[in-house]
Amino acid sequence: MNTRLINTQTAKTQMANTRCPCGQNQHYSECCEPYHLNVNTAADVETLMRSRYCAFVFQEFQYLLDTHHPDFLNGLTIALLAENASSTTWLGLTVDEANQTANHGTVTFKAWFLHDGIIDAIFETSQFERVGGQWFYTTGEQKQAKLPKRNETCICHSGKKFKTCCLKKIS
Ligand SMILES: [Zn+2]
Ligand SMILES: [Zn+2]
Image 1 (cartoon, rainbow, N blue to C red):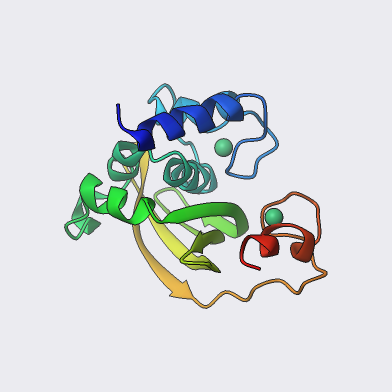
Image 2: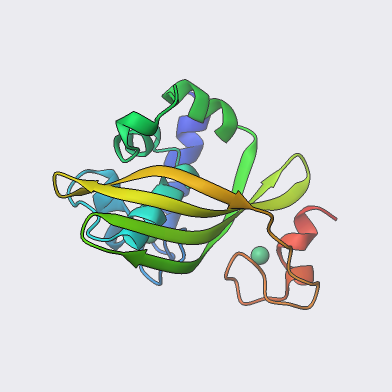
């Protein structure tokens, strides 16, 4: 077992008693884990989006591929996902808006991360399609996210001010 996998397992064990990284006030075991283990299928686009963010955090790359519409993969592989993951630390997710009809949905979110000493977010409106009763990510339109001000609440949902929390990771 390589170091990355050990670290992921350790993170999951520690996570068992804390809030799920997706931002819901539930333990991972009762929140996103059943989706990652294929015990459950996300019933709505926001849940799918949260479980996909959580899969980035825990490097559940197969889940990311399995919930990505095959027509929209554009050559995405587990190797490519793993390459990007090694240098990214995920800090928190904020879902701004989620809408869905029977077979189509959108979620606008900010997924905050630390990369190369810089805090930034994937600020995206994602599109989802339901095929055979299951939701799949198709494409996303990205926007520029603005960092909170120093005295504003931190992006990681700690409840602390940004300057006394995640901002310390870069200063
Ligand atoms: Zn979750
Ligand atoms: Zn923080």
